[in-house]
Image (cartoon, rainbow, N blue to C red; front, side, top):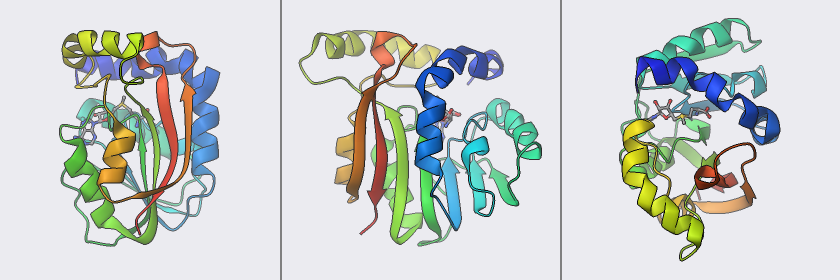
Length: 205
Ligand SMILES: C[S@@+](CC[C@H](N)C(=O)[O-])C[C@H]1O[C@@H](n2cnc3c(N)ncnc32)[C@H](O)[C@@H]1O
């Protein structure tokens, strides 16, 4: 991701954050506990919503995004936080290490979504949960999906490999998770092609 995109990311997202994302992040993250890994942590938009007693690892491969995480950590009440440069496809952790893995607006951008979800499942403890908030492809056959498919080749080049039309819910299920809770809602104050979202919890059986 370019320095410019990373630098302006929080500003670009600010209206959407205020309109819905902050509320969704807060509700999803208030009950995480124990050992927690966040993949693709970006500029650290979730940091303010984590309970303070967790042991948190924030993984973000892009150095320009990662730089902005540090100042948010120093202003937070979090007690134990490690920042790493790992990718979702190759998580540097032993099997069964984490109680929760958090992925917010990341499955759209990873190079290999199926491999990433299998890696997440590998590092979760049995009974551990993937907490997800992702923008996804619109309903198959819909006008919006057709536009997503047309724009996607250009969009992913401009927006750090972000894909408009991924079926992330199906990928979560085919990686072997059991989805316990899912909400499908339109992201507000943003352009129509990235509005469809899913959010919830998926358990490693
Ligand atoms: C749209 S941003 C979302 C940032 C943050 N999670 C949030 O909720 O605001 C997507 C992030 O995924 C990261 N990313 C891209 N490819 C990745 C990969 N293969 N593994 C992990 N993170 C990746 C990007 O560097 C970027 O920080």
